[in-house]
Image (cartoon, rainbow over all chains, first blue to last red; front, side, top):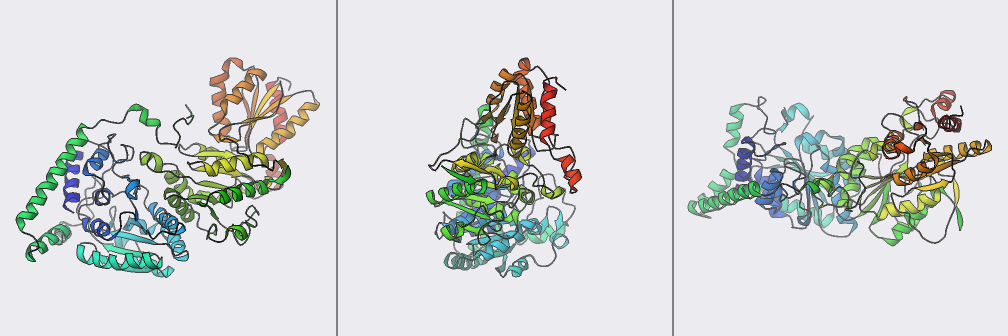
Length: 312
Length: 326
């Protein structure tokens, strides 16, 4: 969790120094969500998400180096510099992106699950999206088919309260998780700021999906401390609200629990923090010193074959 | 050698590929129990069962995305659209996802999927059911686009499309489903990206694909009566486009007419015309002409429709114009 936090804080610094361009949507505040899923799921379960992807990419096991290099648009990035901040990928780790069109990953996630079921595996798929995506038609179409066809998929809305700058109560009618009720799909609300309750519920849900091949819709209530993207003045929310949520910070909360319950000494945690800091600084160095893609890369990876006769 | 309808040739290709490879399946509206809206998939449910012949709800965006996700995760889906006019509500999944994910992932993801179904006008169905979409799909890097005009090549090209590891758009036509042609009994594949000379001639080259090929063919018969021998090139694949074959023909005839059932602005004829002037400028004895739809939506009324849809007479006139015989 701390790696996700520090990675993004350093990424934001680099962005503000003009080290790289494009969009940059930070996950800060939502780290318990990605962490709990990675903790509960198997390495060969399939995951797909939206464009606020840095945290899930890191928890899925993409190195901080490959993630940072991707932000910098370098050839050593996790998508060879072709995807950028919104499009992290690692197909070997069953991590299917990073998608920039709101809600586009909802049917993709169901499709990943469809293939798992078709092939008779017990793998499940998870499709993460933000609260803004709940209003897309793709969600309703996909929910209907996922329930109809009993697909082994968990749909997860990371409800951080805002669809860009529009508060959830102003963009969605009713409770988000209740959208699933219309299709008879199992659903639940989880506290995305609390790692332990997340893990507990996810274990139950994942076991059910794996065993019985039926979809779930989880509404995870969380909060992002940073703006929608780097250019967001955040006029739509108050400082008080932000302060209130900072008291509930998932990382601080976990830290004080560990110390209070004497699971580890504060010094041990500091050591972890130092290691993470070193890892992130190393990632920044790596990204800065990595080469940009060769010019020839422009025409690579469009088609499977390397000799496609492109129109010129 | 059996005479097959266009729909039967497609069905044969689908069935053979599904027998050959367990990961191939077909999904779409009415493909299973109804036997296909145009009977293309007739009998396939009986052979392959509900697991591999899948009726979908009328949710093109959703089932297209499920197809793309399944392709990312190792399957080879064939997604049937009842018509490509309905694929407009799914176009985000085709253009933004299927076509781009490989590139955005730096080549990590393979999306072997075929999107197929009827394209372009099918008579008096009015504006929303009559659009030729091949130029739109061909505009996007990452897709291959096929529009076969005859059963023989529909069979051979569809088999290649299903085995291709890229997303492929495969266009058919409601009005061609009943069209019959001899197709060899033994299996064969036609490579994607290779056109064919469908009629040899020395006077004028006509480039025509899909249903427009049949318009050109009728015109060629008329022109022959007047001693004008046209050479018809059917590119068969829109992307990649076999421009070499077209240029070779123009070097012989020095004159060319492009027949295309799209609208004129930014259509296939526009791109083909541009490439011809660049590659064969010194060989042309007349400006490149095109016969297309007018720049208006499809009308319903029979009288207006006949004015709207390209007729062989317009091709005859265009050929005479490039011969300076008008």
